[in-house]
Amino acid sequence: MPPSPLGYSCAGKVIAVAPDIIEFSVGDMVACGGEGAFHAEVTAVKKNLCVKIPAGVKPEYGAYTTVAAIAMQGIRQADIRLGESCAIIGLGLIGQLTIQMLKASGIKVVGIDIDQQAVELAKKSGSDVALNSTNAALEQTVYELSGGYGVDAVIITAGTSSLDPVELAGKLCRRKGKVIIVGAVPTGFSRPNYYKKELELRMSSSYGPGRYDGNYEDKGLDYPIGYVRWTENRNMGAFLGLCASNSLNIDLLTTHTFEFKKAKDAFDMIMEKSELFVGILFKYDTKKELTQKYVSSTAKEFLPGGPNIGFIGAGSFAQKVLLPNAAKYGKMVAVATATGNDTRNAVDKYGFKQGFGDAVEITGHKDIDTVFIATRHILMRNM
Image (cartoon, rainbow, N blue to C red; front, top):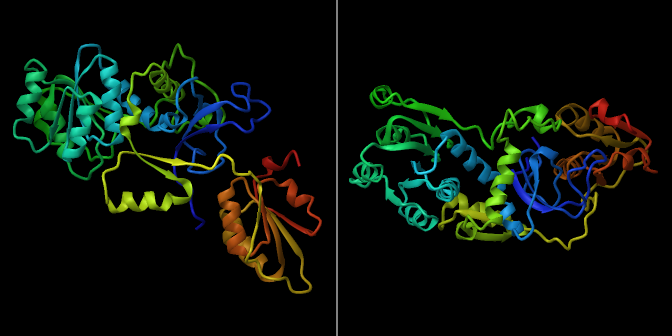
């Protein structure tokens, strides 16, 4: 299997737009999310997954947009109102963003986590009360904050295989309150609290309406605002609006910034948990010359005879069937794919001398006399 790109939230400057795109122009600063918004120097993202960064908002704030939209959608699902109360279980990055947004909305907030450092950060994020989940006075404190009723909603932003978060949510919620699951937690809770209080359990799907809908994300078909007030794109824009009005403290959550060439150090830190981290940013060399060509320094010298092969597309079928056999009998001259990650992998794995990001480079290559078209036919209609 080829290596997969990581990430789904980024920000940067537009360097090109498709002919049918009128919402964005070259030079715009944008925040991007979802499919295509990888950790990379250049990304290609569909229009409904991009929003302009308002003037005066730092680009690094834009890099948080997708994660913040996840937090915002959890709040939308809670349908929490001005003056009500909400508990957040799980105080990682999404939990901290949720706290800040709730406070900007006039909500009383309780932050809960098993990590005391996360609890202390929640206090700085504005939580009215922040407690360790092991605190014996937790339930009593929550009831006092909520006037003796329990909180109106609980948003679970933790990630764990334990049932503790969903059980605790049932204890803290008032009658007919809501429990919203944003994080990855099991839902096999015991009956008493949820039954007796008639609690409503809701799932929050990622960034909001439109997520996982091919018509919305891939084809760019928006939902009318009169019927769907908050889509994933509008949630992303709302977060940047809060940044523009200085309603959030994103700098507080940025614990690390790494040069992209040192990305491995960041992932090692995360996996080893060698130090406290919350928000981690990658910084790219924006002065680096961009190119759609990659030349292998390890490609083998060609032997006389055999076809001079070029490939357009290097997907799963090409890699499983065509490329291994073609590499046995032909001269692997060049390959072109839609993404730099796949191109680089194909060049290095199958011995191509060159890799490109544009199919025209293959059909017009002077050294190629045999072309394999291994991509969808509809993508070749303008060739």
